[in-house]
Length: 192
Image (cartoon, rainbow, N blue to C red):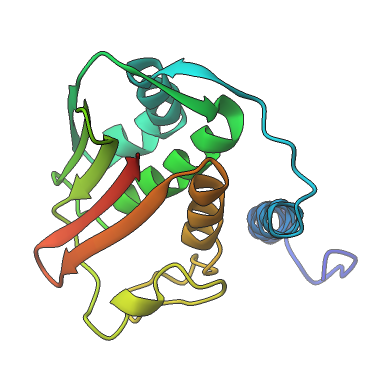
């Protein structure tokens, strides 16, 4: 199509922009699949270190601040001051995927809440939203690779939450989700 003389310059630019967007999606998908494969096959050597949870959350929210602002969404943070022993970069990837999911499934002017606390039994990070929620039929499959729930956007490829779960479990954590359609979702990450 781009070689065709039948397209105007404006149509060619529009087509190139669409191609660029699709290529970025393909690149993200391939990269995510490679990461997931490396984790699944034990090729990833985690570099665990003590990480301040407040710093981790701020780092994960940073790349999403502009899309969140464009949707006029509100981010509420309730974070205790404590550290967890994780691979900062890999764990950031997991949290970003969950936050991105919350952002995408929360309407304009909605709220995304991040809570972090530590007690004598476990440390937890809870990410919740008042978005579209996940149906009861989809809930048991939400962390399966390539699974797309009926509320998933066309942009979704069913990799982000599967990757997040694999990363969290590789860091000796546990993740669960609670959700209700029309009410929102709650992702609970625990370290014992």
